[in-house]
Image (cartoon, rainbow, N blue to C red; front, top):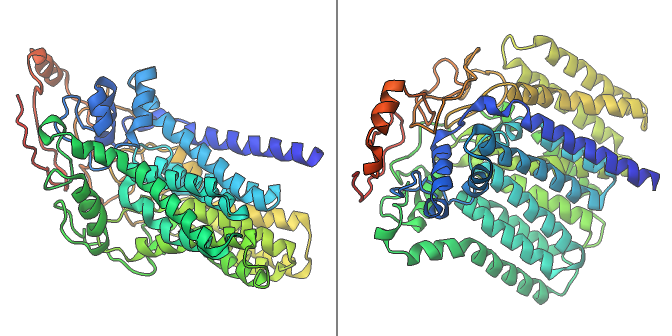
Length: 534
């Protein structure tokens, strides 16, 4: 009872700390990605704009995603009024929920400390801190996929149909957040359940079919509603060339992302795909701190459980999270179309769960040498990542390297010294934690935010970037926060309009559906709408 009580208090501290990190100075980012903030503002003024995800209250055109990620933010604005906090707080709370789900999934099969380790890794992943403080669709996507993974783990334990159906519902609704990216976890989840569930084979097949049907219903109801509404009575589907949601999902947000073909006016933006993309200067500091450790722990824990029964729930859970990491990671690495480093937030729950659960498996089976190797490798890789941020706390990399290697050597000589284990964990988490704090302390605006200090790769903020937000409503597009030299500006940021412009737009505005229209200076092409401004 004492141990359980302490575990609950420790979880409460973890979630409270995560909430503080994700909510700290949240309003400094202003409208964040004003493209989506404008849609939130529109949805708060019109239920029709809310349902379709329109960029404007009059319903001319939608954003380039399905609208589920907008809905929590819109409801928050309707409750509390339009402000950056009202828009961004739901995202931060989704982050806390994701940490809680990672903890719960690992805790079911292992000790409380393993769940806490997994939750801490999730909370401190730099790109997670970034995206749970931002208004892109990724926050809801990650939360729902984490819920789906938890449900699959629960379903596998006893072959429970209900939990598998709930997983299908979560994945289906995740499709309404970011379309086909939600389905990247499907092959692994389905295969792991089919191979490991403790029920008869054909029952497993029927359960998977039922879960698939639930997923189709959860994803398809909104698509069906859009299809049944005449095109003249709804907004144009932004990002598509034929006013079609299916074209948007399969083209611009689907095949075009994989092969780089020019669907929706956007092809490959001269970005190099390759096996090491997740470790390069653009994505490495966002997600890869514990990525090598997660992969090594997955392999090592699978080997140590090789003689376990087919239905072993611990190994099955390792495979659930491992399949998520491997499949999604490979697609992110090799996709030829549009890729931004912040997409990698979708890998954070899998890495966190594998680190927590994999470490517990190795520790409980006395594989201290393997854990020492993981600690040393993580410390070395953290030193490499920290060295990419020239002039940013250069002492930190040295401390991490010395502490990590020292802990690894000591672990080889002494199996169970608690103080050494604590030093090893701190050394492995110090790098991402430092990036996480830097991310939370800095405002982020525009379409392509990045976590942590500048590394010379991707798009970073200049030192001393403005923290203020534009007054009034969400106004237009242009500019990007956290951008370094040679970076790409003018993309989906809101600039404060002058008093003269505001007065001009408001003069007689009640007599028009749109007072003015403009195309911002972005690389994103304008999608023609069949409607005309009145």
